Length: 296
Image 1: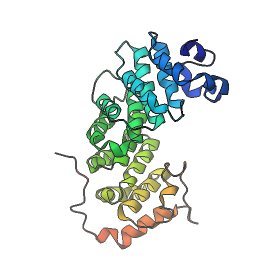
Image 2 (image 1 turned 30 degrees about the horizontal axis):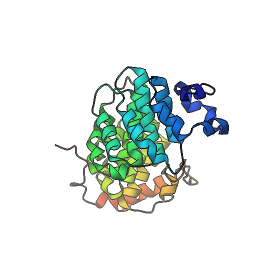
Image 3 (image 1 turned 90 degrees about the vertical axis):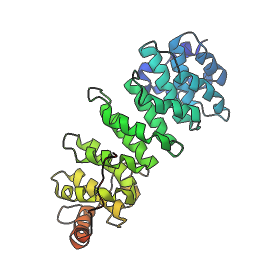
Image 4 (image 1 turned 30 degrees about the vertical axis):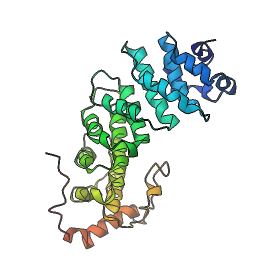
């Protein structure tokens, strides 16, 4: 029985995100290494797409055996959506396997500045680069490029933008700071995007101190998430221990949701602390040389 025939008892790549067969022991027992390799070698593009996807769920000691097949899938010749699904599934599975491969990351980085790649390919490539961020410092300029140039007409525009910002914050190259700050300050961006960008800025720590003069006015925003976002960035950029400024209270890598105390006045303590710091200390500091500037 081919891999595609097995998968047709459950679901196809079109609905993999919501597929309940991922936890089906009977199906997983059939996803042997040999079955997956057969799928990669199939003349049927749907078999290859499914093999590329399900390889990410193969978690046995010999899983590294699948890497060469996944790298080959990243280079699937263009034949429209079907071949694109092979490439995007392979990109996702490489991240899920968690095994670094230099050639794979180089291919994924190249996608960010090449034309012809689908939204899903771009998103999956960025998310996998994020997994291996410490090995991908050279991806910074490409991530900045896709973050600011991904067409707004793409349904996944914001997801790609946020994913790129997240990866950039893991790499930590200051070249991204002015672009991240510009997005955070833009009233044209959805609040959830600006909140996500704030997390990326906060991860830069002291390197983000150049953003502080631009962030202070946001502390008086009528939008709660923006006030808290600005306060979080300021706390990390100044290494001040404002209320609840520990990473586990704002960074989803540690937790899943924000946790901040509220004062009797109704204001969040971290925002009040940031305002007090500015009034007592920050406004008297020399910020003339601390401006996030775009590279020349």
